[in-house]
Length: 505
Image (tube, rainbow, N blue to C red; front, side):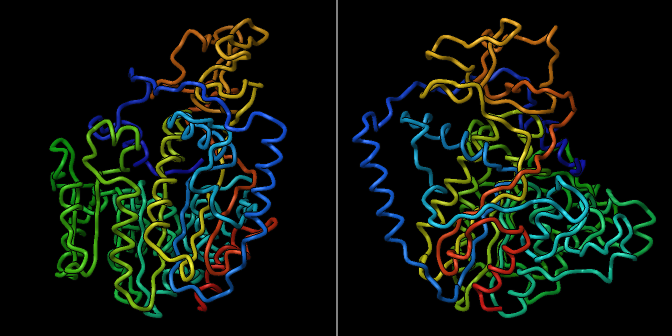
C-alpha cells in the first residue's frame, strides 16, 4: 500500500484535528425500522414502478457545458451498500430499501481498476486513468506507464495531459475539491506530473530528486501553467504550502513543512490579488463569490477532518457539501463552462484504519455533496459522474436479519447474536486484513463491545498496520449529457474519454 506520510497526521497525530482511533466515543442511535414493502403485491408494484422509471429515461446526447466528477476514494460496492443502509438507519427508516442520492443517477457501469503493473492499484494510477486516459504504474501521477518511479528525469518525457489541463487551455474554468490534502494523489492527478506520489512537499523529496530539478506537487499546483490556473482549490494540506519556520494559523504547536522557505499561499495571493485565500469556516463563509476571481482554501495542516469529527468539533471547517456548493457558484461565472472534481478522500483513510463507521459517515457526506450539486446545476447541460478509484478489503456478511444495525453484531432474530465456532459473536462488517486482526485464541467477543462506537475497529483476518485496497471492480454512475455511455463493464481510463467527448475537446 502506498500513501504519503502526511496520512499519519490525518489519522490522529494532530489531536485537535482528528481524535486518535481507540478513544471512547458515543454510538449512533440505530433502531430497526419496518420495511415499507411487506407483501407480495407490494413488491410486485414496487418493481413495476421502477420499470416505468427505467423506461421513461431518455439518453441526452447533447454536448456538455459542465462536468462534475465525484470520486469516493476507496468506495467499493460493499461500502456503497453498507453506506446506504447506514444512512437510512440514521434517518430512522428501512436502510435496506433506502434510496440515497447516488442511487438516483440513471446510468451505471462497472469499472476495472487494475493499474499498468498491479492487480490491486493505489490512488495515483487510478486517478491518472480517470482524468488523463491512460493506465500507469502504482506510485506515479500524471505520467504514462513508461515512467520510472522516483526518477523525474527519466519520467519527464512521458507526461500525459489531464482533462483539466485541456479544459483550461480551451478557456473553461476548473476546480478541485477534496477532504484529503489538496496535494494527495487523486486531486493532484488534475494538475501534477510526478514520479513519486509522496512528493507532496519538497521536504518529502530526496536530495537527489531536488538536485535533478524535480518539483513537488504543491509547487506544481501553484505554478500550474495552463490557462489562468485552477479557479477553485479546496481541501487540506496547509503545511505543504507554508515554510518550516511559519506557525500554523490554527494549531500553534505546528509549523509548515516546506524546506525551501517558500510561502506558496502568499505566492498564490500575490499572483491572484482578486482571489480569496481562506483556512477556516468563517473566512470560507465570508467569501463573496461575485467579487472573488479565484478561491484557495486550505483547512487543515494535513487532511481535513473526518465528517464525524468535523461535526463533533462544531464545524470549524466546511463540509464537502459546503465546498461543492461554493465551487459550483465560483465556476459557474465562466460562460463557457467548467470542469470540477469533488473527492471524498477520507473514506479511504478510515478503511485503512479498519474503522467502518467513519468510512460510512464520509460516504453519507459524499451523498450530501452530490445532492448539493444536483440542486445547483441543470442536468440538461451538466454531466455528473460518481465513481471510485478503487475498493478495499471491506466485507458485509453473516445473514443478519432485515433491520439489524449495520454496525452491529450479526443477529437473527434481532438482538440475539449469531455465534461463531469459538462461541463468540461477530459483526456484519469486517475486513480481510488490517489493524483489527485477531486470532481464534484471543478474539474479543463483539457482543460485549460497543461496535457502533465512533472509534471501534472491525475485526479482520490478516494483521497489518494499515488495511489495504481491494482489486475488484467499482461502480460508476452518471446523469446528464453522454451519461448513457456509462454501461456494461468498462476500463477505468475509458471514463476520461467519455468526459472528453462530452465536452467536445
